[in-house]
Image (cartoon, rainbow, N blue to C red; front, side, top):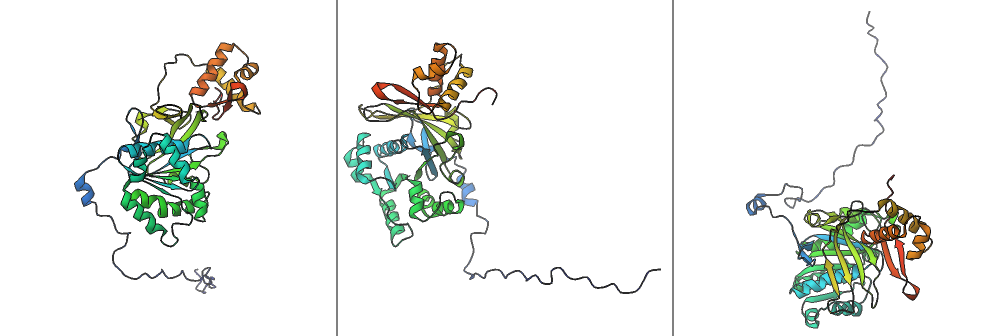
Length: 369
């Protein structure tokens, strides 16, 4: 028989939970940005693939995409500022304007470098603007002053030199993705919206093992870019009277038009160019296309041993030091060391009495890794 006695009431588990807050009321001022975008104009114009047109390699291939944001990252003294200034010189030579936002250096130093790179004084006076911000872009007339300069110049290239210092000036943290997004909304993206290619210069960690594909701080520094990201690996140290060289490696290429003209590098990086600088010559700098060398034999086992020897050394090693630490034929060890230098794994500096010293910057994996 089914009991007709009423069951005891069950306590409502949500009885003491307050109701959700009412949605924030916004004034009805018309359509918002949450409406679907009208694609009729886009479809009528046809799809135009973004291609790199700002800056050039020696073979004429472009480096940066107009209207997009980019980054160039390296350790100190690996040549990133020189490389960016060389790209600026190229744009000036082609009759284009360049805006330089400098959070690290001074006008005299940047001007001297551009002149060293063969820029003419009239180019700098007519179509180059140097800005050294001392307050956030949100202060006073800062934004209006910058946009006035952009409007007068109509630059094809904007260089932001010193991202870490720029973030600090704005009270932002490089490890916070929200802060990086805020800097992008306020500084780099509005500049790219003018049609200029924006190139931000930043540092990487000294530890090659933990460096990753982006600069010091949050991965948003890479994810937030609409163009390409490059890192530089020094192969031969720069200096007065020295012919320096650094490898330009692609770590991100959102439009995808750079990698077809690159060669595979180490890991997930693609070798796009070599930046060379010798200030004592008539043509002091070049961005040379990568060259695929014909090497039927690569002593990969010995290369791994040399890499391990350099990694375990407390200081850079000479060729003799390397030969003392790696067993086997001297000729093969020398070939392995040269291959590591050419591949961007080892940098070469000049020591006492002109000795060539070798330091590991990108470990070469052993076959069991």
